[in-house]
Length: 306
Image 1 (cartoon, rainbow, N blue to C red):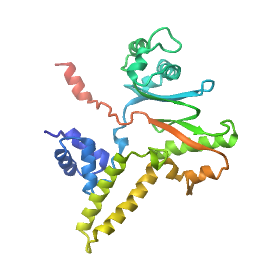
Image 2 (image 1 turned 90 degrees about the horizontal axis):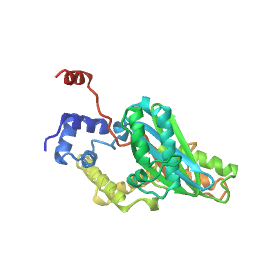
Image 3 (image 1 turned 30 degrees about the vertical axis):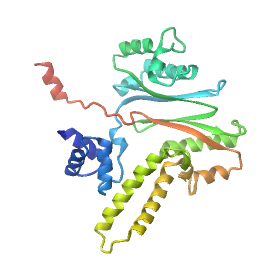
Image 4 (image 1 turned 60 degrees about the vertical axis):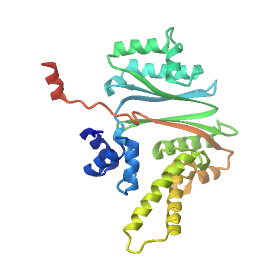
């Protein structure tokens, strides 16, 4: 298949690899970006994809907890411009969507669009249509998550990014000041360090297998150019060490605690002397995985006068 210059540019931004290496990777993988990233990593050309290179959509991430129901929701709603995302009508809509998720048994965006909007007489779809018309921009409810139990939330809004996190803890007293401070610290940890799982037991085997395959291909390539090649059993030990570091980075409990890097998050929690267990968390970053349409003013003007 033909590989466009824009695709090559996007992969370069994601991996910091050379243009020709990115073009070759896309050709080898038939334009599959995830497979191309893996190919580049196996060749030792890229450490990892920079997801932030594709974060460009505007909108809001919002989290809310209904204390009476012990139910919380986190939602992401996208708009075309940051200006629209800051308007009162847009913010109100996002807040209403979050409350509607809390009030209804829905698991998909399509199901959410079909139910009555909390605080309104119309469905979510009807209110969405009305807001698109009045704000004069395309608006899309992209995703949401719903949790029940002892919940805590945090929204980080700075540097052009909006990151929201909702955290579920199992504890004896959610109103205990030590527990609340722990929740605050964990929310900051998750927001800053972006773990994917709570514990190593939560990591799917497919994730482990794929990373192990990448690391084995990488060490074998490194070994080929080594002055003194190592035997296979030594290479396997190297991969084992790298996999240990990999799981420590993606699992919250194994991460170094941001306020005290000498201890893990698990040891920090244990040291508080309270019966606290992290059950689940959800972290949304505005526009994560989306690519904003690139505007070309000259082309736009040219198209208008044709």
